[in-house]
Length: 144
Image (tube, rainbow, N blue to C red; front, side, top):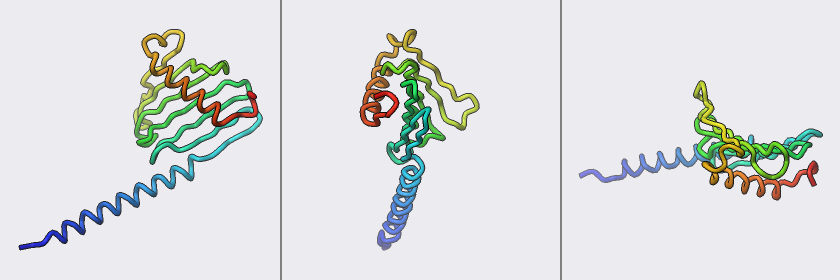
């Protein structure tokens, strides 16, 4: 009768390879996406979320802002969302949803607050909370 040593060795090898791959992805994501860009016109803070996702938060000199949210599953192959506060009042005015970058036409839809708030209240409220938190956490010299 055979023992299960070969199967255990194979399972261990697979787990080790998956663990190393995951750590490699997380390391690359941290290296490339935990950064700050700043000049006289804007400041962008980029930070990682999960193994493959990240968020870019940009505040412009006129106090308007953008939040680009890339999927935690990987931003090249999964959906992303751009949230825009166009007038700097702390309220998200537009939400642009896009599909995977491998699609030819990746625009899923654009929500405009004045027309779409009632039917998408939870999306706008979630975006407003995120904007409020990011403005608090990454205070900009532009709009103090």
